[in-house]
Image (tube, rainbow, N blue to C red; front, top):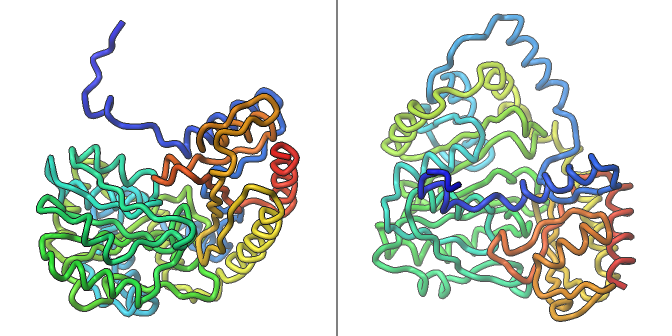
Length: 395
């Protein structure tokens, strides 16, 4: 029987990160000892000072519907954060708080894109960017990069990808899945191209900004000529270990913020009241209060890189942020390992799941078909064991 689903949902791909995580959970349920390196979720607990703020909000009886665009106190706190960390001046009427950064991105795309518009996605890119473009009936255009270029695009590539239909470009630094960080110089060179095309808007996804290893990220909106065409997206999930609290936000030109509020008012309305009150404490806290997590991520990164470099066929670079490594594993394409022929990254990722009991994510999902993504947001013990299993499986 054919079910009468909409063309919209039928055209939408399943999230490969969530699909792999579900498959890993299913195998675990069956008793298989799976180590999952597929999800981008910190394994730390939310810091106590944030939990205490949430408890206080509960005791103060915050339990009513929230303003669609967020509590004014939280929006004011976000403005202070933008000024402190990014040298960006936003007013509260330019801030919209949403149920996670994913909703923030979806809001922006929905209010700016029309059917047939083109969205440029420097690859590799987060899996949901392309899906969100599809939902808007827009066309996404990949701009490829490689591990040899640290997964960064050039101004010449950007210029070549622009057409009269180009409406948006999504930047993400530090990047998921590669961990690459664009420097101010690199962003300004890309901005010089975009300055010639005033019809193009920039979505700058900065959700991993605090997870960087001595290489402070630069906000695209800090480029004066791009401020009025850039939407800065951020949230609390990654750096504050608050994935389940579901708080994201944008800083944007007021007319875009107003449109996003209108959109959100018909979809979810305002974000969770307790999470918002806790978020005030989180965004106002000195970044040093979460440095212990960043330091641990750096330690794990160095361990993972050191171990992967010892596996023949894994081509590695050194990511400067986030908590992923994104090795090029194209060496294995066309080879048969333990009776399994590897044709592509999908095959390799499934091979590791079945033979090594390690869950990763295929690079195809990120627009980089020669790679796989491994998250090191797991314990050192798990990481060492996972890479030991991988090495044994491919050798």
